Image (cartoon, rainbow, N blue to C red; front, top):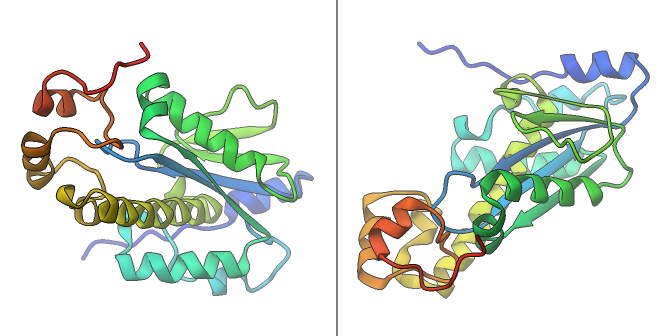
Length: 219
C-alpha cells in the first residue's frame, strides 16, 4: 500500500517562531497545458488557530486528490484562511514571456492581492526574485507545507473551472475533460479545428498539430 504523505505546518510554525506573522503559501496550475491560462494562488493560514490542522485534515498536493476532494478543500481553505488570492496569466502572456515568466507574473498578482500582506513566502519550485521579500522555494513544497498545499488546491480548482467555461465557449475542444493538457483527443481536435484563441501558440505540440500559428508571436 502506498503511503499517503500529508502536508504539515512545521515550516510555517518555525517561521512564526522567528517573528514572521503572515506566511503565504504559493503554487500554480496549468504550466504544462497546451491551452488556457496559468493560474497561481496564494494562501495565508491562521497559525494561531489551534484547530487549523483539524479543519484541513487530509489536505495535500492537489494532484493527489480526487476532483471531489479538491472541491471540498477549496471550500474549506476559503472558510479557514486569513486571506486567499488568485493571479492569472493568459495563453498570450505564456507565448510572450514563456511559461516561467507567465507563472511568475501570475504569482506576483496573487501576492499583491493578499490582505493582509505577507511577510514571508513559501513557494513550490519557482522563486520570485523581483519581490524583495523573505522567501524560499523548494521542490514538492505542496507535499511539505500545508499553506502551499492549500494554494495548490485553490489554483487547480480555479483553473479547472475556468477551463469548463472555455469548453462552453469553444465546444469542439473538450476543454472540460482534459483541461487543456495534451491528450489524444486534444491533439485530434487541434488537427481538425486548428488552434482556438486560448491555445499557446509557442508550444511545439500545438505547432506540430496546426502548422503555422494563427497569430504572430511576440518573440
